[in-house]
Image (tube, rainbow, N blue to C red):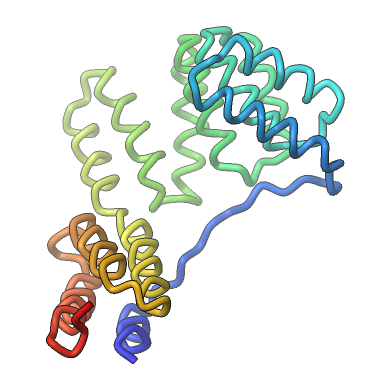
Length: 219
């Protein structure tokens, strides 16, 4: 009941973009991708690049592998190959903000600042609340010694945390439904810690937190 009331008070939907593949990949592609992702997460970039390069060569339409391949090449500082992989991916999937962002980072490493800033500005026009994009633009402005511009973009990035707070709210709601009160309370603490002081979401979540901490909801 409490969570239904809180959800009605928030009135802000979660939204996101998903990068889809044109065709459903073979199960072995997913398995190889999962293994490569583990290697990547361990920082073993040479092995990750090798595995992902082979995977992309045989399943070139599998966008997640292409993205991870581009990122691995970036961290290996092979910016030319990373640019080739990510540029092709952005061309095939212009809806993918993640791919475009890594392409921008690669262009900056190649001193293609004007191209990167132009691409980033176009992304911000249609994704003004993406804190990653605002943060990246702040770095560009700071490098140009435009500290006022950097401050404005950093302020913008800091005020777009509501989606992340809502994720913690949803985790709290699920925990509550599973009768896991410690998790529900902990997730609400995280949500409130993320929200800016002036956020319209703060009061509904504070009321919800008060309700969960009442004697009626003891663990």
